Image (cartoon, rainbow, N blue to C red; front, side, top):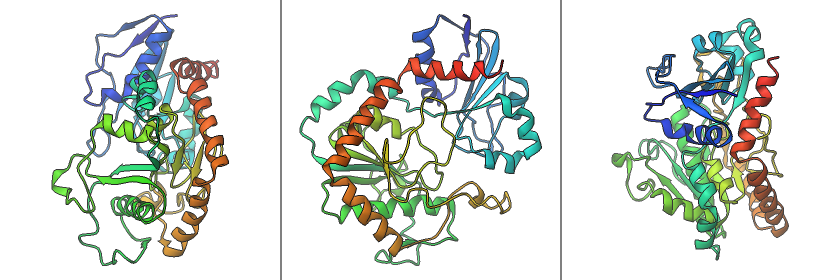
Length: 355
């Protein structure tokens, strides 16, 4: 079998590392001297993280954008197989048209965006876990935000809730802020922090704090019974989630993922993770494509919604049987699924569907 990997020059190449490591471990490969033949910029003028490789004569394109509505149409039309992270068929049809999607549906496959340090974490898992042999926290929530929306909000910080009319950026902040507040005011032992994503001007030491060095962050995850990962309003399983799984720390999500999961990597609520709001919301595919609610969960949430959801979640987080079961399934998932061999088997699975 001949596999030719694309020479990567992207500043975001680290997000391709686990994919490349997996292929190199399982197969003999060579490297193309050409750069990615497809334009990396998306419609907003930003880089669409992607790579192209040749797999036994078949041209494969990996679209790792975290936007379900962005596609590289040249690659979709010209490659033999188009792997898309954050694939949602409804959003795809909404933006590209059902007839167009159906024309190429047979060569579109779901994929995942893996953590840049996933290979490192899988190799060094025992060291991180040994350093956290005495667990200090019930739950760890360290999440980045783009802006401090408490500064210009008409909502008092004692008024729990999120307005339906808020922007995706505002919703992104408020859902993380309220989860942080509920965890901070609970009886759980927690490590919860909103960080600035390196935007120093956003740091005030009260609401938004400096980013944590990644190795300290990994230690915090390993020292926790659960890792809380916010996925709203995108409703996709982010690469951050796999850091906890690699360290055998069960996940808690604020909402169930709505994106397609590739064969071999499916995760189910209450089996592989706990969920704050479950499958409470859906994308509104009836609105215009100019309305972000067709690809973001921008529904209003009142105090009663948070109170009810957190009451049920806190009960589960403190239940020893729930923790033990999720811990065992997380370890099993890491051993059987979160490895290079399974990733390559997944790629081969979709290649066989082409024939």
